[in-house]
Image 1 (cartoon, rainbow, N blue to C red):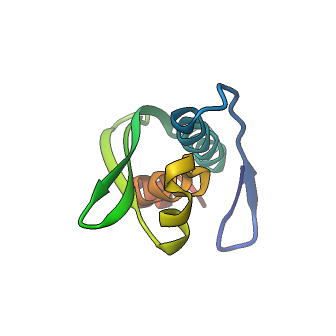
Image 2 (image 1 turned 60 degrees about the vertical axis):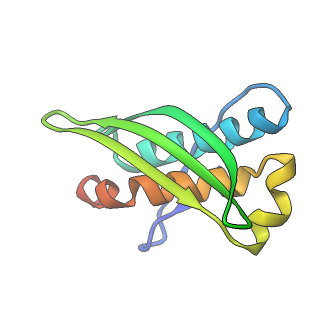
Length: 115
């Protein structure tokens, strides 16, 4: 997975695992976490605590729980994502939905570490 920062810089992350619905969600989340960590230059370490696709209010929502730590702070982050695109992919396990949920969770802290 590749993330592109507002200045055009690109950061990549990879993950390997099983090809199941839950596996795809997890892989999408992990690859996005690795790319986000790369963007911080090692200033932030991120751990995926969980990822799940749920049905709520007639929509599919991908929810992630992330733990982060830097040299002087600890973070407990929660993110979610839903959209018509994710809705259509949710039954198969949306890699895109998982990545968007990770970005939703981490967007509040990434800016502190990316110059």
